[in-house]
Length: 132
Image (tube, rainbow, N blue to C red):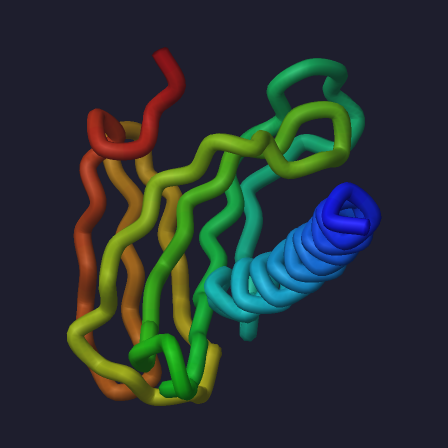
């Protein structure tokens, strides 16, 4: 009789662990999806006819404050290769958290110059975002 209870307890523990594990994976994926700031605007200097590396894109990204996350306003510099974003990127936190994603970008030989709607200007040297 005692052995039967042990088998039942072990089966219940295994079932509970399985359900808890699946639940943890679902919750984790939901949180991770909300950690990446949403792209609100993008300006690219890309040659779409080239194969391989095609150029750079500057993305304005924003994430509002949430239950587990704080507000984020960033600029991402992303390389584009064969029509897709390269998984590696550089980012710069913005000194302003305005949601409006409009901005002007000048791609220069040794840097990228950004001018935000509210007049804030950022100069990002090529050494910060270049691919090695």
